[in-house]
Amino acid sequence: MKDLYDLINIRKVNIEESIIKSIEEVKQELNGLETERMCQVYTSFIYNKLKEKGVLVRIVDTQSDCNLDYKHYFLVVPNSENNNYIIDLTYNQFMYNPLFTSMYKNGYQLLTNDEFEEYINNIKTSTRRKR
Image 1 (tube, helix red, strand yellow):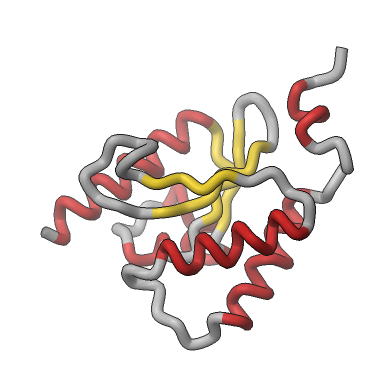
Image 2: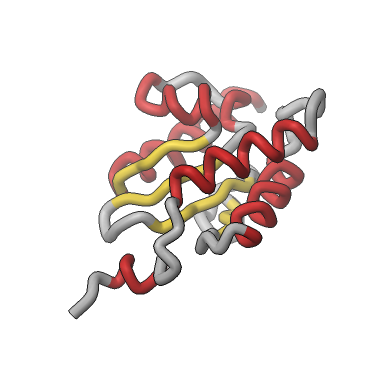
């Protein structure tokens, strides 16, 4: 039997390449737009670019999907059973955590399920400090 994640990507799209190209395109389109409090805009633009490229992607809202007090949007792209690409071009507004260097620098990162929990906790901790 085929792996579930092989069935998700039936067109055999190069996921990481599609993410990189989508981020480049969105950065060009939104050139000069600040990242602070603009997560919904950036997330929506990248979501549409990835859908055009045939990538399975989900928008996550930290309030309704993660039960956080703080509303923040980011994208999840399935990669395998234990890891997913997280795309968040506005993550630099949160407290720096060396585990997410690629997220700060490139706007995306492949995270294991455990690392994803730490990513959410970093958002939660950072927003508490902002208040």
